[in-house]
Length: 255
Image (cartoon, rainbow, N blue to C red):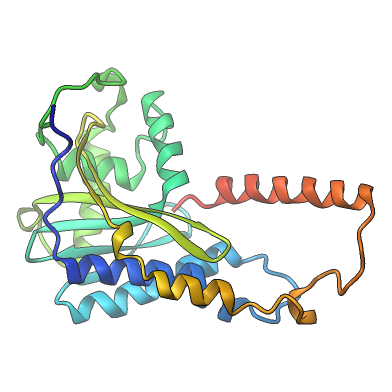
């Protein structure tokens, strides 16, 4: 039984996307928030850094990278590669997994990723059989709305639908300002994983190591307690706040 097919994407372009993500979650966000007393906009700042790098780096590789405004004020960047005809978007792995659960229940069907899969990957087949997780008829977005969403993406990229051969997502995980994993995934209109490519091998391990070792924890600016020891109750409160912060990040980080 074979696995999902690979996504034919040039290594230099895949590496550039990974580099943009790695910079945003590492040096980029640290430089942007260094010295700030509060970081209420950290999530948005990270994505602004990543989207700016994607726009600047991918154009050098003859790709088109333009922003698209979603419902509300949140903006994303769509990347189109003329050589493959693929459009791609970047999102966190946790967000993708959450969306997949919602799509199974027939929710969040009008998300740009779901609409793109329904229009651009229509008819793509699996190379092996697997069970479909949900009723296709009740869990696909309205075609008119999906067309409206993808038409906006095409308009922003200044290309036509006939130029597009498919759509995929670049899903990543990060921890403590380090990029941990990246993969490219392609879903069809039935929400089946029809293609996958592991991009973690493209992560610059040296940069991750430098990022990790460059933090001087003896420096007062990197030590919020300034040498003071916390009591048992204070440690419990700190743990509770950390759990709440992690929950809020998963809820807010909905790119």
